[in-house]
Amino acid sequence: NAGVTQTPKFQVLKTGQSMTLQCAQDMNHEYMSWYRQDPGMGLRLIHYSVGAGITDQGEVPNGYNVSRSTTEDFPLRLLSAAPSQTSVYFCASSSTNRINTGELFFGEGSRLTVL
Amino acid sequence: DQQVKQNSPSLSVQEGRISILNCDYTNSMFDYFLWYKKYPAEGPTFLISISSIKDKNEDGRFTVFLNKSAKHLSLHIVPSQPGDSAVYFCAASAAGSARQLTFGSGTQLTVLP
Image: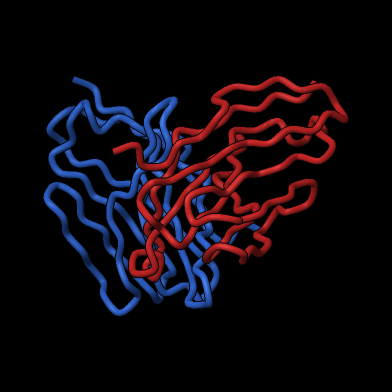
């Protein structure tokens, strides 16, 4: 069981470059989301999706784009990377039942450094 | 404005003793509270949750207590084991079309053998 798979695990970008963090889940979960983790700040929600074709903003959406064309995939796009986007990014998914209590399944994370 | 606060960045406990991790919240709309555990280089994993209609939930060595009047919850681990050494995140959510979790900043628990 792969669960939630994130690629790449590590990435270094220069300011202004764009890139996409990939996230795929094989649990047929309706709900998917992206969080960033910064020191001393816990995890903060960037964007989330409750199903294919439906996305919404979280707490810190600026500078990021998402789309949900299939149930399995939820890529996160950085349009023009900035040093403030240096962080560890986690993708998470959940079923309709489990999300009612907030239970999420997380990927292993993608560490992004913007120079 | 942090709605979920974990004021202790770290905690060390002797193996076999009780570990108590604390969490405070400010938003009265939160109705579900969760604890996640995170090992280095891994994603957080769900540990235990509690609904606001309860004041205690137990799962094996892990018990979560909720004090709504004080807006405080705690996670008790008894007995603590070296494998419990990890970062523990408290999280809360409010009812809505899609629950958004608000996380605390985490507490690094170290269980000493």
